[in-house]
Length: 135
Length: 253
Image 1 (cartoon, one colour):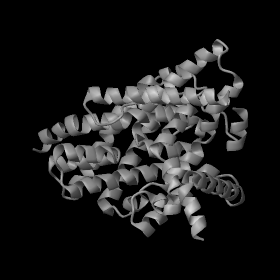
Image 2 (cartoon, rainbow over the protein chains, first blue to last red; image 1 turned 180 degrees about the horizontal axis):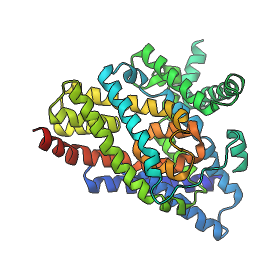
Image 3 (spheres, rainbow over the protein chains, first blue to last red; image 1 turned 120 degrees about the vertical axis):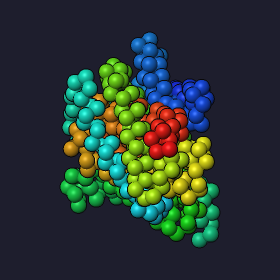
């Protein structure tokens, strides 16, 4: 059943977020610390176990893959609901601070990516449709 | 006319699916026809989204972009953090955990470096503009990390509301810039493998920026960048009002 995949995803999301909230509480910060990350690890591990035991049929996987395919449209909606006016009209100091932070950190990406040896580049991507078909 | 408007308001989420679908189709067509695929359809779609957000904010004076216009209210749900994070988690399906573990050192270092480097840069810019007290510098530094760390720091340290607003604006600039800029800069910083995506997520930290930037670059990198970015705001809220603030106070009195 497709809904099994959706429910599995939802369950991992909720447990991961709960861990992130509790970790934030333990650290004394009013923020979720790593909730999405914990949820991702949980989903990978649990789905892998279920698949090995034959409890996760391909049709159930569709419930997860649907949301994965909806990722970009959701991000577009996210972009459309950002407070862009404030970003643009924040004045020179806000703009310079934001731009400088991005520039310096981007420059550090290749430096940090080199730790422990360079990873291989992903095979070239033809376009989004091709990728969805592969998965 | 009113009937249609009521329908679109009441069934906002369904209308949002439709609107985003139209944006995606138009963006992919533009990508093929105008840029011959050189600029990905998703990158164009995100830029269109940001333009819509500007228009919405400009017309209504609100803070939530296009969704402040009543009939586009559903966009706030579709693009809100709940569905966004659910979709991010789903992209992890099929990821090899060994890769995440292999990139662990890179990831942890990138988060710490990302928080402190952004905060230092933000604080330095604040000082250049005359905000030389430790509280204001820490608050703007927090804003340069993310637009959540800025106000959290400002509130904790008792910064003026003007400085808090500036820190939010700095964070928003960062987030928008990361969304737009990443696909253009990806080639030059080697953003084409899981490890550089983990470094990128930890260094940039802004969840919306990283989510948008990687979507526009290569969706397969999303889980790796999101994995590290998800720890960033929490670490920022922990480190900037404490360690970073005390360091500033020690240095500048």
